[in-house]
Amino acid sequence: MVLGAAGGRHPGWPGRPGPVRVAAGEVALRPVRWRDGGAWSRLRIRDEGYLRPWEPDAPGSWADRHAQSAWPAQCSGLRAMARRGQALPFAITVDGALAGQLTVGNIVRGALRSAWVGYWVASHLAGQGIASGAVALAVDHAFASAELHRVEATVRPENAASLRVLAKLGFRDEGLLVRYLEVAGSWRDHRCLALTREELDGSLVDRLVREGRAHSM
Image (cartoon, rainbow, N blue to C red; front, top):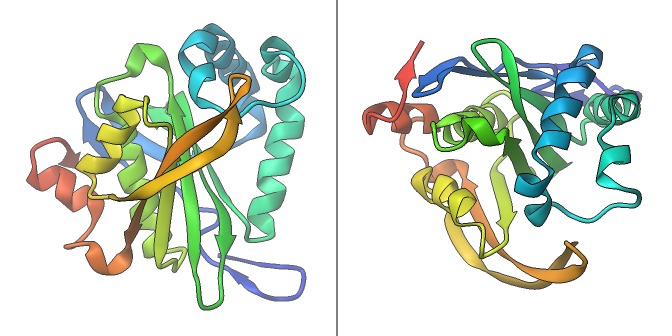
């Protein structure tokens, strides 16, 4: 836990949720760090075709936005939001190596205590339980250490793999957000899925273990 500039509590940061073992190996979350730049850039540039259809548009070319030289500003911005209590930006690791990224963002406290979760995993590791393990770790951390009540995710209806991950973890489909985000040059519909603390029987990691899709460490 850290304290904000006005002395407010920002529970859950920094944190290192995990690990949990899935088919690909030992999955864990840790805060993003400066020296992630090289590995982050290599994965993002290599996987442009795999990732770009699902991610919001932004100014500049994909190569420029994901060059190693672009990482310090991104990392600094993410860590600044974490210090202000607005986000929990994590690197996803498998057996200690960078495998993707996960952010619990737009944290609102007070009576709402809500946030969204967004994530990506490198293409060569897809389908091996990493996304499920990482999201389970993040949501458990958000509900316990970060003291949140609700976590939501927005996903394009065409993104079947991500929808499967969230459904397996028990996220409820709350409906369609029409023309919600600009993605790949057009305003795209997204499905909104959510989970509240009361809906959990134990934890999401416990659920994966009970279903035989993960092993606790």
